Amino acid sequence: VRGLKKHFPVGSGLLGPSGLVKAVDGVSFGVEEGKTYALVGESGCGKTTVAKLILLLERPTAGEVLYRGTSVAGLSGSALGFFRREVQAVFQDPFSSLNPRLRVRSIIAEPIRANENIGRAELDRRIEEALDIVGLPKGAGALFPHEFSGGQRQRIAIARALAMRPKAMVLDEPTSALDVSIRAQILNLLSDIQDEFGVAYLIIAHDLALVEHFSHDTGVMYLGAMVEQGPTETVFGNPQHPYTEALLASAPRPDPDHRPTPDVILGEIGSALNPPSGCRFHPRCPHAFGPCAGTDPAPVDTGPGAWARCHLLTENAMEKAE
Ligand code: SF4
Image 1 (cartoon, rainbow, N blue to C red):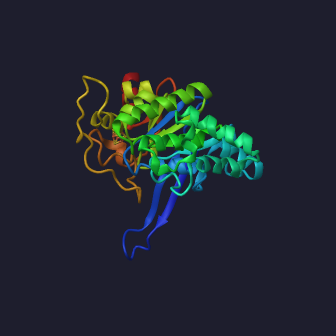
Image 2 (tube, rainbow, N blue to C red):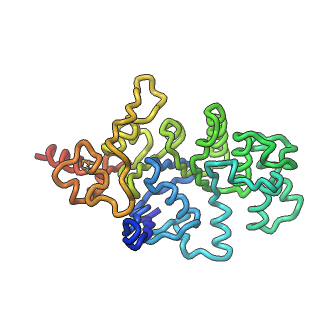
Image 3 (spheres, rainbow, N blue to C red):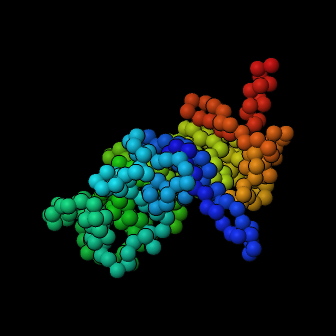
């Protein structure tokens, strides 16, 4: 994903504020083959819009999504079909993402039929194989979604994606609608699938404990922009941006010494409608100083494959140099 932007003009100013909603504003990152990249940040930071842009559900205002080095914006015909087969999605809510009027078999068959010209026997084999991988019994294909629990429905959604033999999957909050006891099962299933088939995942999640355990790389978004990214160990082990630090401090994590401090971030997340000048986090940042309100900080390397955008990092580097 390179320099991706999604802006929406809103309002006339007569009935409410008008301006430009900068839902995504210049986001860049890469997901490696067979690896997991997590996008984190509070609701409204733009991570779901990034997922929609990647899945071609929305068109970017600027920037591009590249798949295997080719921009997906101009794809058509068989090249577009290839992209749609190889990049699949699993959404948050398995209760609404499955058509209640279709049997599981038809739910899984639908995208295969839409993208590939295969015979009945091969189709049946693909459906059985996908159900088997996600741990659903043989007869599951003949049942309707309402005959399954929430966790099983998410397994059906994963089977539907998997039957396309994808190389990459966008997982938008894949466990947040499920009971805590089921979440680990679904995550283990996704890990096993990655190990066996080398599928790359882009996971959108607000559960930081999940991200820490599950992802190889993490990007932290705030009001449409990426403020820090790098290997998950680096970002979680030694956060360099005050927003990342506050986000991690406020969330429950599987560390016996960690005591969440929910009110550590000051005030509410700002609005992507006419976002603050300079560093977008400056109205909430306890460390804001001179340049923060006027100048957007540039990315500063913070370790192998990691960077963060904060004027403090430049200041500290200059102090060290003196
Ligand atoms: Fe805080 Fe300034 Fe750094 Fe932004 S640039 S996070 S306001 S210190």
